[in-house]
Amino acid sequence: VCELFPHLAPFEVHLLLLGVWDYLRENSPLPQKFTFQPQKGFFTRDFSREGEAGGKHLALLHNVLHKNIHRLGGLAARFRP
Image 1 (cartoon, rainbow, N blue to C red):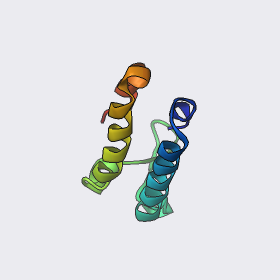
Image 2 (image 1 turned 30 degrees about the vertical axis):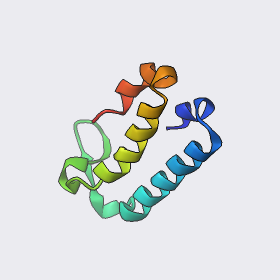
Image 3 (image 1 turned 60 degrees about the horizontal axis):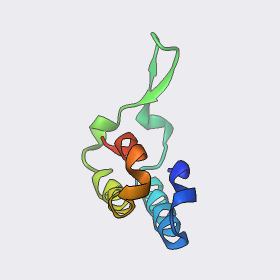
Image 4 (image 1 turned 30 degrees about the horizontal axis):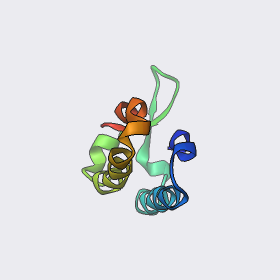
């Protein structure tokens, strides 16, 4: 998300930061949510088991991207699920 900040108005940055904070509050990075992948040699988290919890948080990001599509069109594809 930080690569968007230079292209946004201050209130939009504030909204995105609040959205990130809300997501982290609801989806804390507890160690129990990670599983070790021996073939990769590190821990990963399977977000597909989380359901649609991220959908409401991504909606805010997509709204900001849509409003600024003339400047952020090249970055928009990076934020699609």
